[in-house]
Image 1: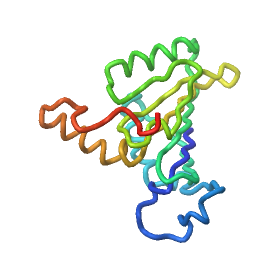
Image 2: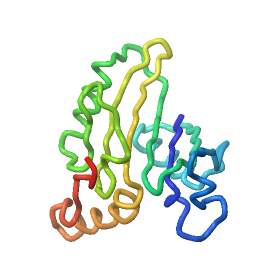
Image 3: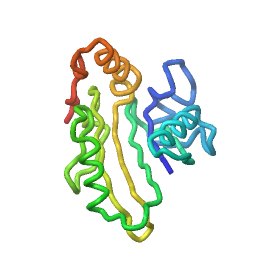
Length: 174
């Protein structure tokens, strides 16, 4: 299950009445609900590949009163024997060598303002023992870490350059 709050830049740059500041500020609204969002199939494809088995995804995007950024809260049913420590250890190990992925210290939560203008993603993990669910919260600047940053990072790798060339991990308002 994924619920993601997205700034207006995620809707493109075409002038649309529902994206006017007077309509967006002070308001949040869902869209693409019930599997209708265009990115749901690629999430299913990539998560299934990572899991090595078919997965299902329930994705609910919301339009947030901010110009850019995505704050996503994702959760999944935990396997038996999972603990808060094992979840944190797994994420620390998985992202230890990833220059753009920052697993925050325990008790610190991702914020879109902290990654604004950067190619970084902040993540935090938790285990809800009562519900038996792993929870991951992430924040990105969807313009810098989105397709543009991903394209530059991929180009760097394809050209044999350091993948961080031309990209920053520091937001403009950390």
